[in-house]
Image (cartoon, rainbow, N blue to C red):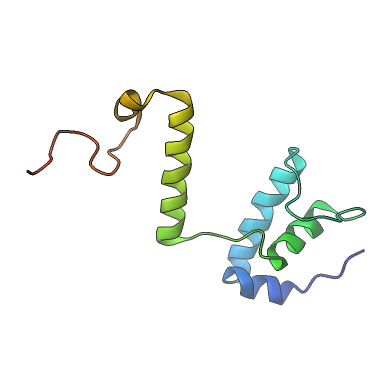
Length: 106
């Protein structure tokens, strides 16, 4: 069994609530088959792996502007794979970076 410093993890992610949310999401990912972000995980539970990933700075909780930018980037990448460049504006439920001719001020 691996000892985990809960207070150190909570401090790293901005509090116990954020820690619980992040650990819950990461454990679900690990359980669904996503690989660990760290090496040497033999004998560790999913919870211990997630804690070790946080302590190794491989896993963090993005909030505010950082979270919104990551979400936008991920959605843009997903759409670029599934739609030709000229069709992205038609697929997105919102406007990105003024890509539409509508509303542009010259």
